[in-house]
Image (cartoon, rainbow, N blue to C red; front, side, top):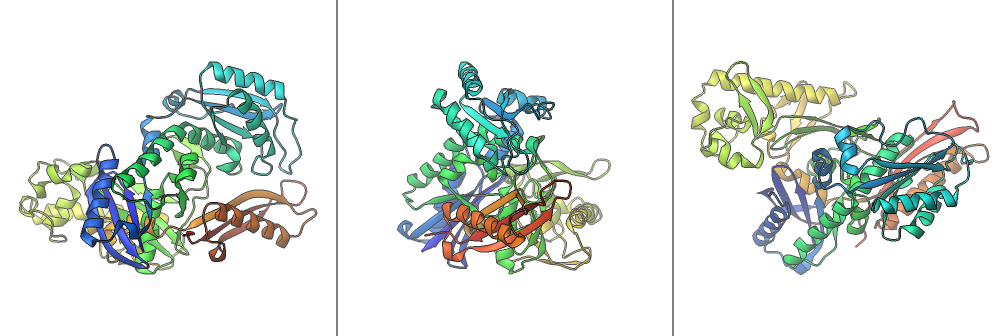
Length: 513
């Protein structure tokens, strides 16, 4: 049986066919305006070239930037209502208080606050007022809003109030879509609430996009299950992806890091992924991306759901080079138009790829237009490119240990042979590492909440957290006998009573089927 991995980037849509641990073929096709055509083109190419039978494809894994782009561009977002259960506490900073004005406008800026919420140890701040919530439901209905985010104070500790509020609101809003903040974000009410509102605003787009992926596969006669990649390097089912589209944010760099680890065998390294428009730099720990430890900004909105720690710079194979006065690299890029705009393809624009081709580092297209610029200028530009990459890598290092730099992505011809004092490893199939990362995805389960050690031991609490994470992984489609602990930390919270400790724990397992 075969697995197909697809990664939709800003410039190219990559696809690979894998049989067990072997990459049979990888292809790149230009990303199209409608995205789906690019997916179909890349799929058709790998199936045609490998001559595999469609009936022997066991699964297709897809990584997409669709939802991140929607937030960044402020487009295709649904009008959303935010309901916070907090009164009489947590009302001085209302929902969406720190959002950019255009983002608030894009989702409608509608919010309500109601009684409810818990203390850190699960004690009630106040009980839910059913009549109050029914009145809120009537107001939401009058506004014709069908995407609703519910956030309760300390819901990662106790999510019962969010669930109860959902049932009450649903009696008046039976056709509405609900997102509970406890299912997405971590501790920190504003960031968790932001993530829930953002997820609710993307639900309609999520359904359309994921169904379109399914339709693309059906058009090609592929009937196997398909999965969407998450930003922690694991997979989610089509239905799960429709419910939680925000979990795809930053899945592109994550796929590249996972693919780089698989192709090189390196578990701890710095990964530099150079695409057509940007370079993403991240760190691998035990073969998975190092998670961001602080809140992450997405389109100007602070969120706190799991995200990889990635540093991006405006450097890619299509980056436009300006040499008129001082050398300027980017931030603009010709992107997927490099085949018509780049000098090496007869176009009018000097790009970073032209520099590499002019210096003989790569053999693509016609090097003569770039060579006419002179060896001195080409080397000066390349020196500046090298400096940008070295600075980005140094920013991601957390120790002086000489771990390798894994160079992947179609634009990785720009990466020097050594990055500072670190050796560079460029694996076979480096150009499609992101699609490989999608194809090898596993299933994860995660817990991040506060436990009280007043009546339980530390070991009992950790065991309870692991059981909870394991159940989440199994329900998401993991084989029970393959689940293993990936990451675990528990931090005593001295500022809280009751011998409180925060536990963050993650397990992963192989895809079932």
